[in-house]
Length: 222
Image 1 (tube, helix red, strand yellow):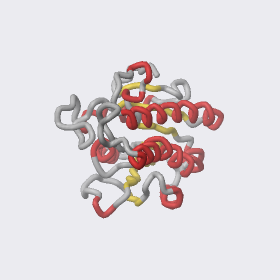
Image 2 (cartoon, rainbow, N blue to C red; image 1 turned 180 degrees about the vertical axis):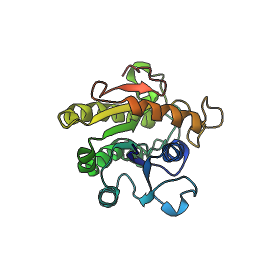
Image 3 (tube, rainbow, N blue to C red; image 1 turned 120 degrees about the vertical axis):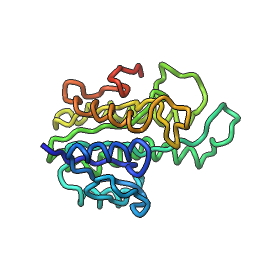
Image 4 (cartoon, rainbow, N blue to C red; image 1 turned 90 degrees about the horizontal axis):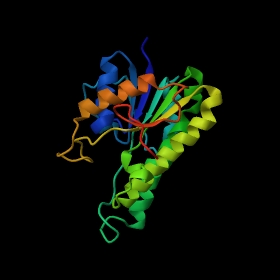
């Protein structure tokens, strides 16, 4: 039976490929991005809606248009700042942007679509990163690591709060993917990562809610 799937950050990289593959499988996909005019054609998306994940009014409008949601994929994210303590890119403005998009963004998105998820008995996938694991902290990339740790923490707390409503929540590491963020030397193509992630989302349920795992289904210590 076709599902109603909402994907944020759907205009490029993994989000775009998840949109293509889910639509090709017969699901109705609502793609959310900041600028629908730049959204590529031929993805199979049923609708392309404009919303920045830090804009509560835009998210509310998108939720109003989306209908019941079987799967909400919080994929929108950004990386600002690499390197050590003295590296460029760790300005207060960049920290704020990273935390708002990568942590507050998933929360605001879930809150906007809460009623849609409840109506469908849906589930939530938060695209996090192994870089958010405090158990595997090699240093550097401070704002990205901190924000992805926050995203995992958010997903696990949402899993607790939403369990009574039958809404499962998982946090996922997509692998090192050859996107604009991941760079050309990455291990996986967007197609490979998206296919593996969609498979993980399929098996997410109340018995596994709160999981933090990679695209292969391997648990990540947090």
